[in-house]
Structures are given as C-alpha cells and as structure tokens.
Image 1 (cartoon, rainbow, N blue to C red):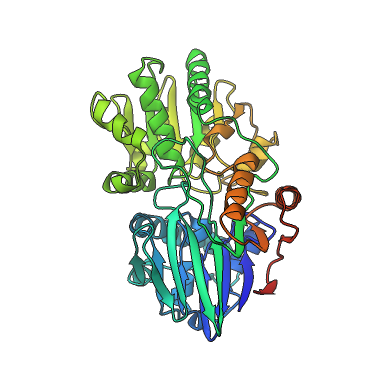
Image 2: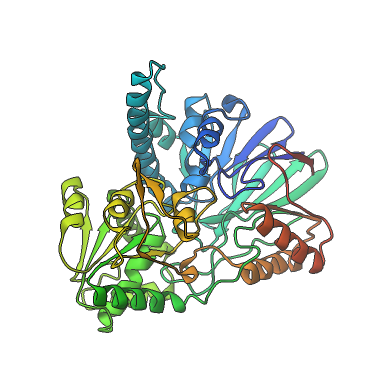
Length: 467
C-alpha cells in the first residue's frame, strides 16, 4: 500500500494525493496549481501519472485548488467515478464551467500576443465540453454514508466545516490481511463560522494527511469579522470612496454578504450601495439556497428572523451579472462596496476595479482570504507599489486592510486541537502535513511532535510512502 503526494506538497495549491491499494489507484483531489504562471501552466497541463491508470477520485470540496483540474484528468482518459457530497457536485457545475471560460479567455489573450511574435498558439487547459464530460463522472454521497470507490477500499465523508459541502475523508483500505485507516482532512474549517456547521474529526485513523495553511498563525476570533467590515465601510463612506473586497466566489463572498446583512438589519451599515460583481458568485449563492442540509443552526434561525427571509440579501445589495453593468460601477459616483472575484486578484472583475480605484487615496482594499505567494493579492498586501494589473503599472495609494477573522481555514490553535482529537480517537502512527507553505508546515510539524506524535512528515512533491 503506497501513498504518493503530487500536489499541495510544500505549497498551498494543487491538492493531489495518490493512494495505491493492490492493483487499484485512488486519487484524493485533483486541484489546480496557482501562483507562478509558467510553473502553474506546466504543472496543470502535464499530470504526473497516466489519467487512465486512476480508478476513482474522492473530492473533498469544490475550491479550484482541490477540484479545478478534474477536467484535465477526464480529458486525459480517466473513466472512473468522482465521489463527493451533493453540494460539492452542484458547486462544481458552476466552478468548473467558470474555470473553463477563464482558460479560454486567457488563452485568447495570450495567443494574440504569440501570433504577433510568430509563435504557435496555445490550447486552453480544458474546454466546456471537458467540464460536461467530467460532471457525468460525479457520484454524490451523503455525509457519514459508507461507499466503496475501488475494490478493497471503503470510505466515508464527514463535514469539514470549510465551505458548503466540504468534507474530510476516512479511507479504510484492505490489502492482504491488513486493514489501514487513512484520514484526509481536506481543508479544515473553524468553529463558530456563520452558515456552516463546525468541523468534524474522523475517528480511528492510523495515518493522517492534514492541511497546514495557517500552521504558524492565529486568527482573530470569527466574531471580529463583522466589526472589521463595519469599520472599513464606515471609514470608506466618510472619504466618499469605494471599498473593494477581493473575494473568492465560493464561501467567502457568501460570508461577507451574510455579515453585511447582519449590519444592515442592526442599522450599523452606512447608507452605501453594495454590489456583488461576479456571475460565478451569483451561481454559487443559488447553490447555497438549495442545500439547507449543510447550514448550521444560526443560519436557519437567521432565515426565520430576517426581515425579508433572506440572510444573503438586503435592500441595498445588488448582484451584478452583466459585464456592461460591471463596467459602469467604475464610473459610478459616491461611496460603494464592491465585492468581486478573484480572491487573490489573479483574474476576474476585481482587476478592472483595482485599475480604476487602487490609485485613489479614498479607496480601501480589504483582503478577507489567504493570499498565496507570487499572486497580485500578496504583492498588494505586502505593500508593493506599483503593481502590474492588466498590462499597466498601477501605483497603490488605497488603504490596504486585512481581516484574518474571515478565514475559512483553521488557524494554528484550531489545527492542533483537530490533530489532538484525531490522535485521541485513533492509533495515529504518522501525520503528513500538506497544503501549507514551508514555514507554516514546519512550524505545525514541530507542534504536532510536541503533542505526542514523533513521526510527522512534510512530504515533497512526488515523494511516496509505504503504509
């Protein structure tokens, strides 16, 4: 029995773990690598194994760094099933279609330049037809229900509390006379977040593959998220500017809107219009409404007590789908809040808003999510100016704020509590720490060792381990 790490190993994105049990191969996640453009281009296009050799996939959740390269897998010959929760399957409809659109748009832009240079054109990573074929391979499974993705393996998904439909996977594998239990944490959420239930910890693990994104940092408590939004909105309103919120269309946008709705209901939001400028976020929000089985008690109570019965909508909020309406936001007078993708400012409509407003001292840019190395968001957050945006060098004179309280990832304290619970309920002989930058993973590894598990590994990309 062998476990090999092909993504999110020594880095945050591109989650991809390959488990070999006898003659069968099970892939856990198949995500896009994000960051340095050339490296990401090469890694995403060239999978490190034959797709047809993979028998099944377990998908922990719908974020693109976990699910975004599934169409490449299918395009390359994968013909097995992709197991996930029903909410994850529905979210992937929107997320993967949007990703295919971005792939095609980016390639068109690059190919115009390559044509002028006399170079051969690139093909997009995948197309919408590949997404449709991928969607046919999905099999939805309820939280807690056992299923058999390949012979000799049974598994169950438990709520990871990270985004709608997110899961940790308990995989029970038999080989000869041995039975081994492996837990794949996926991305671990936080206790007390709105909309979603708190994360569950799968029990009985022999091995744990665990994320470490914030392994060296602590967040503000979730209760601070609403106050950060209120204070930024109030300050920007006083200056008559725009509050730009780069936000992931899935998860983070819905939480920010939920907090704004709370402020509106309490009379604490300034008289400024709020725009969610993202067709994908609109599609995702509709999926949220279809899956109340994933909501926590607070979300259900809010729906019942809300003045209009919609925790993700209020009078001053407008969802913007049309591209021309999005453009008009940049010449709209007066203060406003504009929430737009992408969360790391690597594409999407937020780039146009940054070009038009980042150079103004009246603007506030509020980051509400993790900014990976080498992304535009990380550069702005680090104080770099000017920064390249859509081919222009833009001086950043806006106020730049960060609200870690919005993170949907567990912080160091919460990760250690999760690890301790896994250790208490199982026979954990080894932890593998993934999905973290090297410093974060190393810091968390030291802390897990200090907690009582001597064997903690931070695998390198391509490294394989016998279980």
